[in-house]
Length: 432
Image (cartoon, rainbow, N blue to C red; front, side, top):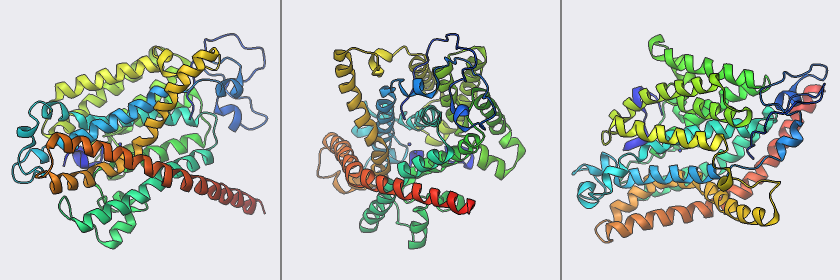
């Protein structure tokens, strides 16, 4: 999601969850819960999956939300921002640093820590794999398509225009794109045409889009435990052989720099929904092996951190995600529908704050980098460095809240309505 503006090896590395119920014998003839029960043909009984309770989708809807994931997303975004402001190779170079001197001289104790903040991008990818699988279970492909469009584009369109305006007025950090390239950026497909993003951190969106497309194709066949397992294995194998195959198309589709992290999130959700077994533990271990190898190239690109430190952080994060997936943090991370009134009030209040934090993550990520470094270059001689960094975080979060309230929410509602109308019309005309 300069530092993390481009991934290693020429590739580009920023719904209500459900608690796993204890397995109980289901009445004879009761279909297993999951999207297969919704998307399967009327006369075909869906496969029964591990962890089935026979409760169907009604039970799935009553499962609580994992609020902690919303908080983790914001933490990952703040890690990346801290890295960009006071932890990259660029801000530590005497001649090109927006601070006017090496940032290590200004923040000698902070720089070694912020140097690892880039790994927040990989954390994003793991969380994304978990959340996408969670939010898609029991949904139609069209629901997934609409949800991704209304989630990604409104804030992104505004951020592209705002960043372009700032870089046009103050072309200090990087020159603004030509008008045609900027307009192509609005499609979010510019990376596919070899056109750089308006902001350097937008490369992560291209990685996310490729994951969404692959998962949409899987959804079209109906999500089941077996299919997701096979999808993860097939994708991981394709990512592993992409480099040796010397195929640009395979590398583009398999996304070897991001695949291990997205797959880890998918596997963790399977653990959350169906419970762990040897197969899932083995798959998670394999994603760790592939992921730590990708970190080697990321560390080399960033040039400010070590592989051992990055691998330790990655391992700790996966352990935290395992705890969340297996319900070890449920007392603090969720609000259970069966809880008492006082429990609902306490956890619901905490949950609202975490949901609010999660809503700031995406717009904050979109506007923090180029605009933030421009502000540093303009103000570093006039404002105390510590105060300036704090002000950048405060201004970024405030701007993210304004974008969420004034841009994302109203535009998303309108866009969702119009997209659903268009899809309904498409179905009607197809049948005409």
